[in-house]
Amino acid sequence: MRTRFKGCARSVGLAMLGALLATALVAQAPSTPPGAELEGTSWRLVRIEGGDGKTRVPADPSHYLLAFATHGELSARIDCNRGSGTWSSPQTGQLIFGELASTRAQCEPGSLYDLIIGHWSQVRSYVLRDGHLFLALGAEGVYEYEPLPVPPGPPEGAAH
View 1 (spheres, rainbow, N blue to C red):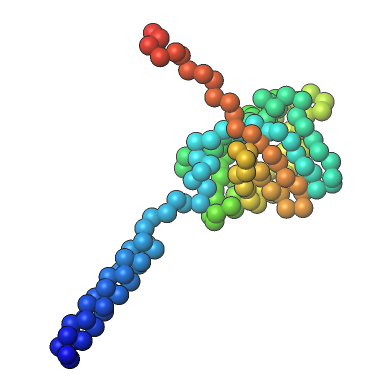
View 2: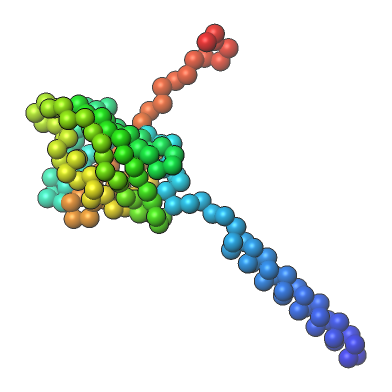
């Protein structure tokens, strides 16, 4: 009886050890790095919900674009100006924009350029909800972007 109990205890012990090792391996499995869902995406501005309670909507959303490239690079069109810079996401939901190198053309009255440039370094976090990207600026408000439509490609079988 004792031998049978020892064999059973050994089997249970090995099973528990196997389960612990499997759990440890799963815990160490590589996960998606923070911000990976932004890489390779392009967005156009829908609205800015200001901390002052005002909502600002661009006259032409195609003049307000944001594209997240791989390796933390980004490009932007902010009304009549274009820029490039960096981005990082050290933690899930956290977003930090680096300095933006931008052209400095004088845009038409009603442009959101000055407002966006003024808020650029204040972006702190993001969330993807219902297919839209929301950038939070703390007390300064929230920017809402929608995915940039992808133009249809040539029909299958079409000559290139």
